[in-house]
Picture 1: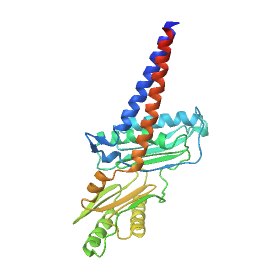
Picture 2 (picture 1 turned 135 degrees about the vertical axis):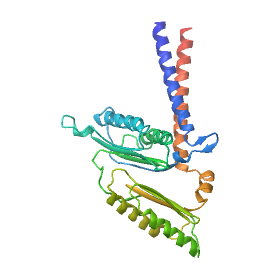
Picture 3 (picture 1 turned 90 degrees about the vertical axis):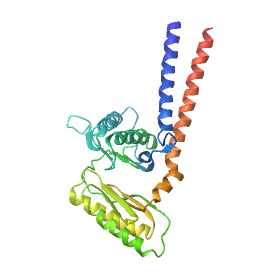
Picture 4 (picture 1 turned 30 degrees about the vertical axis):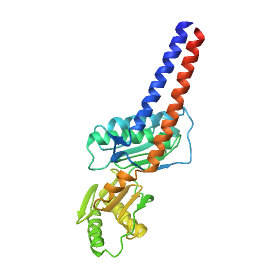
Length: 290
């Protein structure tokens, strides 16, 4: 009987350590040596309303997909997957998905960003048949229905800064940057004077579809945010961004995204409570034996 109690105590202690590891992982998502990790800053997430059942074929395939995403990101900055869509498998478990890192991110930073995104997506979108999560430096998406290679220019997120008034030179430079970005076939960085910007398409788009998507993003950028000093516009399969030089250096360090903080806080609270419950249970059983 004592061996049984010991085995139970050890198992719970291991569980507590695993939960503790998850807590420290999320605590470190946004800081390294006290400074923001800009690649891991949360931008937006989208979750399907339809939910899958625990222990279903879809859940098993989703876990397989997310594992493959993390593994692949240490080798490549983009990849797409189809899981459980064979003729011998149940169509209820089919998953189509992809991940992509920003084009200027080194592969090590890409892998860390994707790992962070994968850990967050199942927390932000629990039991969802479809989900997408965009961090500053990377993106993860999966769906139950096939979407790969199909052009989608629906608006997912926009952010407009303060307005710039009567600065003809700024707008001339901005338009130069935006015109240059529309020539991208994947990822492009551009600058003109004090204005900088970049645009990127998902890797499943053709060159023509990429150009069309970025042109649409630039159009929305101008129509939705007008004369803003900095704008981010994310469509389903591409994005375009511009800013006055130095703008993001200021805003990122002093106004870190609140949604990302909220995710970390929620995980921290849940993890702390779980650790406390496990440890109290172990102590109670240990004292009971004596």
